[in-house]
Amino acid sequence: HPHLSKLLVVFTLSGGGGLLAVSDNSPLSAAYADAGQRDITKKKVVVLGTGWAGTSFLKSLTHPSYEVQVVSPRNYFAFTPLLPSVTNGTVEARSIVEPIRNIVRKKKFDAQFREAECYKIDTQNKKVHCRSQKTNLGGVEEFTVDYDYLVIAMGARSNTFNTPGVLEHAHFLKEIEDAQRIRRTVIDCFERASLPSVSEDERKRILHFVVVGGGPTGVEFSAELHDFVNEDLAKLYPTLKKHVKITLLEASDHILNMFDKRITAFAEQKFHRDGINLKVGSMVTKVTATEISTKEIATGETVNTPYGMVVWSTGIGTRPVVMDFMKQIGQTNRRVLATDEWLRVEGSDCIYALGDCATINQRKVMEDISVIFNKADKNNTGRLKVDDFKEVINDICERYPQVEIHLKKRQLKDFVHLMKHSHGDDEFNIEKFKSSLSEVDSQMKNLPATAQVAAQQGTYLADCFNRMEICEKYPEGPLRFRGAGRHRFRPFRYKHFGQFAPLGGEQTAAQLPGDWISIGQSTQWLWYSVYASKLVSWRTRMLVISDWGRRFIFGRDSSRI
Ligand code: FAD
Image (cartoon, rainbow, N blue to C red):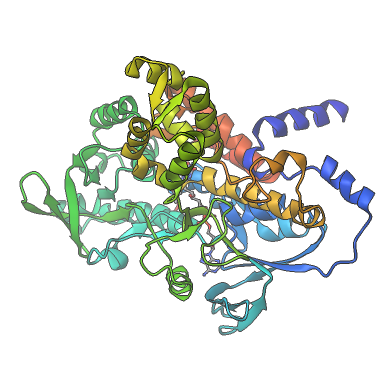
């Protein structure tokens, strides 16, 4: 229907975001058609992982000169921002996953998926060693896959900081199975606490839910759990409500540290009003089957608290297979795999890494900035004229978006004007400017480990791969890339679109670009519409929207299945 198709186009354009594929009608495709099909041997691309980075790479890769093999222990893509909603049944697990084979089958080039994990990368022979999981259909199968280009998008593991007992007794919230397990455990706790033989103290222990980590995931999960208990379980287990306690433990002074202070303050006050027990400055030292031990940073005192369920959400660490690979390529003194700004693994020319498993090495930012300044300061005076300075700043911002982000962050709409003002003449002192940048050098180094970054990196890399052949054919590069001078592609540039912090009770906080803050129910509706539009397919979009509708009308389902 013409109206429906118009609607679909508008909706997709407004929300498809990071996962939209490059159009086949692009001028680039026309260029290929003009040039005629070249008889080239297809390059083998191996993609490890079907998360945000791997899937967005796969979706955006359109050029037919590749033969792609995707290897991952999960045969689906999971929309992680809605995982906390799965823990209480607001959204069903199947509504937020997309089978990877649905994406693979739509590819116009040779693409295959293997459900297996990579356990070793052999850079010498350009092979990855993989093994399937053991199932009741058979044991572990081992095989190798050859590559010309390897794309590592294996994400990260939950970090326990080697705290004793966490692996054995705590729940993580990283995968779909984790969210399903948490949902079952919450219901288990309520059913067990309802048994007549259970003592009052034991009942209190079982209904004490502890969340460790006051980052966005820990905060969102605490809020979701609070809503589940108050809106649904309280009606079904009326005698238990008074025993339920939710504690959120955070080692630093505040929760949501990466957000604006106003959001942190609002969230802390809301949790206080909701009766969520927020304990800041409290570091977990040990977890046993029934107790969690914390050290209070202010007093040094150790407290042992009985609990029924612990959810651990304190950050991420590097996977063992990636650590092993880092050793092979000489990145032994680093904790995270380092790439250059084109997402190529340092020390390798055909391996790329993106998403949570890698970080762009920005060590050279300050060195590069010095070189740019020294070039501009031809007479070596240590000072620059206004116009030269403006040019240099533009050049730096072009290469290093994080510098631009920093300048904007300080709300210096016209940085040049401010510099002029502070120095009182029409020349700028280079050293002063450089030292102002090095103050925040460490903050500029790493991009956040988010789906937004991973998806943008996947799209960027696929775009580079789509242009690879034409760049080899015309080595001087398309006109718009020549300016960069150092590489045939522009370096990866991250565009920050803001972030949400759902706080429960239909209240959400959002920090939008330009440091705009929005908090409340209207922001919750913004959250609904942004996340609905960001879901990867129409199928998942419809399922999630109907889950939200079902929850509004009938409440959440508390069956333990
Ligand atoms: P992942 O998405 O974790 O994917 C890694 C892939 O690698 C998986 O398919 C995995 O199966 C596969 N893999 C693992 N080991 C191997 C192996 N040995 N061999 C082959 N494949 C392997 N970010 C936001 O921007 N906004 C949010 O609201 C948000 N909410 C979140 C909520 C939760 C509960 C969580 C856990 C994360 C959230 N994030 C959010 C962060 C976001 O999910 C991650 O930053 C993002 O998933 C990183 O993408 P990735 O592709 O690097 O890794």
